Image (tube, rainbow, N blue to C red; front, side):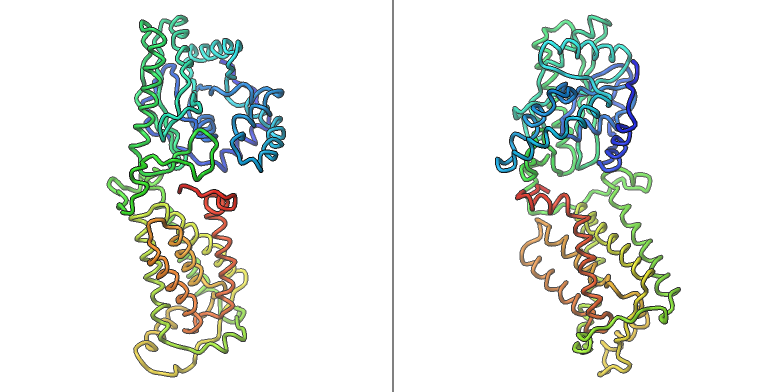
Length: 481
């Protein structure tokens, strides 16, 4: 088949979509027949078609609602199909939006590898173009869900697409195969299941029921075989209504350890192990720590001081909280790595953001504090240990305080953990607050360093949690995850 001619604008849009959308991997790709086939998947809102366009290899076309390709029909179809269930108070906005997207919709869906689908007499042209694709050995990708519920994984399928197999058999004498595909945005994976073959000798009504039932059951089976995750449903509903693949586990208060069996460095790009790559951020940190601590002389650093520092006395007993920070960071990383992968990802991303920004501050605007006592007011084991810490950790590179930033990052992750009880959240909050205060009492930081860490943490909070956590709540939604 001839390839579509695409404009430069569409190519730019396609690249931007690839850049900012989840990077899907293919699992079970060996189950795709080398000859022509129909891939049938759950729609998963926009994720299914985008993933199919970007990642399914070879000659392929995607069935697309013809109304989204027709300038006169885009607005009414988009509002009816996407946004008619939105809260009444905001529907005026979505009606306006449905008109604003018309030129963009026409450009994108006519330039992409699509075949227009209609539900009137024009359906014949859809079938003819689809059969030409299959005769050329291509793959047809279909997302046939409708609004009738089937289960928590997939909505019921519209079954008329099965008639393609009868038309294809009449043209070629070959029995067409249908391959189930589970689109899992949260796992960033397209899973392919066992194909089912059309039986030309069977009544078409029987084949519609048999093939659709097999495809829906196989997609459900694939989804349930994966770790607990949120399923992005076909309808455009609030995030708080998103189902999970294993509802029987969703309400459990018992943590299960992450299964690292089969882990190797060669498998770091697989979704179940890819989070381990975030540990590489610590290499950056220690490299920059060496530079800022050893290659920037103190005389080049700006002293950090405020009147509040003079009011805060040195107290070695705060060393328990200051030193406890090391156990807090290490313990949090170990715990989340082995028991809460999502929490580990969020914590590491939070830490990396604060690391990068703080280290840039240390290099571009070197800082130091001159608050350490020349002579300790008391001599005991704690002051002796404090002297050792002074020798190990120099007084440069202090603003903003990473001691505070990391602690607040751990607190942010802990407070969002649904499986962490209220008592433990309260204890974590009090300990983190004491850690933040302790840096001033042991004279490792100025109060200004603590304050400077707050906007840094706000930046990290927005980057890590803004889109998936805070934005839905600002809209009055409560995400499933």
